[in-house]
Amino acid sequence: MVRESGDLAGRAPVARMKNEPHLVAACPAVIFGPVNEKIHHFCHEVIMRSINPTTGELIQEVAPDSSADVDTALDVATEGFEEWRQWSFGERAEQFTKLAGLLRDGVEQFAELMTREMGKPTDQARSEAEKCAWVCEYFAEHAGTFLEPQPVATEAANSRVQFEPLGPILAVMPWNFPFWQVFRFAAPTMMAGNVAVLSHAPNVPGCAEQIDELFREAGFDDGVFTHLTIDDETTAALIDDDRVRGVALTGSVSAGRAVGAAAGKAIKPCVLELGGSDPFIVLDDANLARAVEVGTYARMMNNGQSCIAAKRFIVEDGIYDDFVERFTTAVEALNVGDPAGEHTDIGPMAREDLRDELHRQVTASIDQGARCLIGGQIPQRDGFFYEPTVLVDVEPGMPAFDEETFGPAAAIVRAADAEEAIELANDSSFGLGASIWTDANRGDDLVDRLDAGAVFVNEMVKSDPRLPFGGIKESGLGRELGVAGIKEFVN
Image 1 (cartoon, helix red, strand yellow):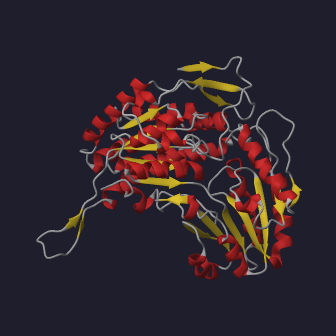
Image 2 (cartoon, one colour; image 1 turned 90 degrees about the horizontal axis):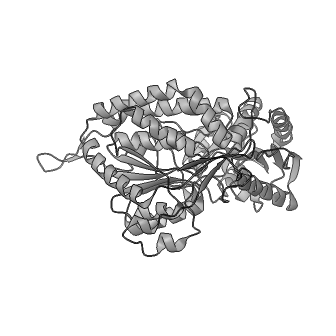
């Protein structure tokens, strides 16, 4: 059920942390307690609100699917799997190639939708839609090769390892890349023969509905891709449902702990991508101009709301002052405004509570000794904007160093030398990505000393369909994309 904006236009959504989609640890009795057999015990008429972050106005209200609808959808997904698993890789590839074409044809429409619902600058939203087409085409082309049976020499006449799909896989997805996160999960998982059940973030219902329509328009049968509008408790209950065979989450650490515990209790595989505090290390032999240029984008893209954004700039002492001056100048030159504007670099944060949390982290870090060179304030304007912020003299123990700062705030840390830079980079509970700027040969020698799921030398951290994506420590477990990603949900 959808209701357009009315007298509730000024009301904010329920507060949630960081890029958490909508499954939180706030209801441990639901997640860890006895799970009732029927889904209807968990379905509630909780209205979900989508707010335009540029204006603060209500876009729409959406009521969750009924218990009967959820139950039927899972039955249809189970039936759909039995058909889809029998399709050849070539037949599945035809569907995903068609889907990629629809994504490219509708780039402008999808970009406008993403911008309206979560505030992403339009040019970045266009790139997101194009990247979704790429991941569909990539796995359409390579899935069959990745999952070819592997012969193994034994005393038997014929020994081999085969890769078979598991069934319906639940995807709990966040709002910050509302198209990419879904297709990053769906393309490898479904090309492997599984079917997808999507529970998307409640503040991007239009994106969720549009993605569902794209799969239908591309000709996917009922049950092969299923979008459910469900609340937190129902999502938790689905993990325990026998019809769901695995779960993928992109979200916060607290959401990851809850999902991981629920999946473990149900003895089901899970992939958890939980964000990070990625270091961006700049050593004294780096190309400083290039490091500043890329570092500015790596921190401020998507309005600073990316798990793999450069969050801690760890700079060697000899070039520290020069880097700070150049970086601050570059951030000051960014255009902040309506994300639909063609020349806007930074739009609003996605929700008011996220902005307030970032401001708390910035303020607390300043109170503990960090210096704020620019920004650090909530501007007096409509929407959920935050001033692009540069903090210097940041040290371990400050929120800007220890926590994930999910917004347009950069923390710059001084390191005496390369050795201390590596130590500071690893002094984190997170381990998603890392970027190091130095002589290429030297950088290659330092790669294996960094605690991260992916390390980039003289480049920002990126996700790429050809490479496995995921982290270690509190950044999660399991991998998406690449050969490793397509094998996460197979027998």
